[in-house]
Image (cartoon, rainbow, N blue to C red):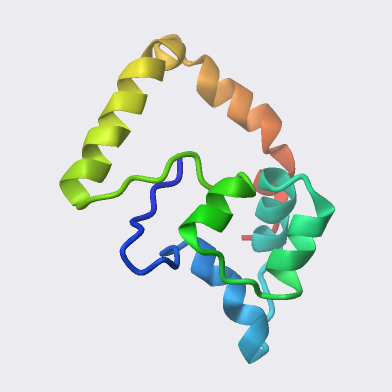
Length: 113
């Protein structure tokens, strides 16, 4: 889950990390591996990596980079996080989530951190 307050309209980290293209900083291989693993659409990858697009919260949600937008303060964000955790906590009870993530993100774990 990725939680971002909407007060500024521009998401906080980790999405701000993609603006590195604007000041000429290269990404570690791990960043590129995470982008490929988490963002399947090549057009969206280009928008993030090469254009350095800074997403508003609604844009990030529409593009699938955010799971939820919570209007309010930290208490509201934590309440939503607890709601989602309660809904899906049974799925994690037997440790399967961790095993699935290892298989799903093998390329990321092999990247040079």
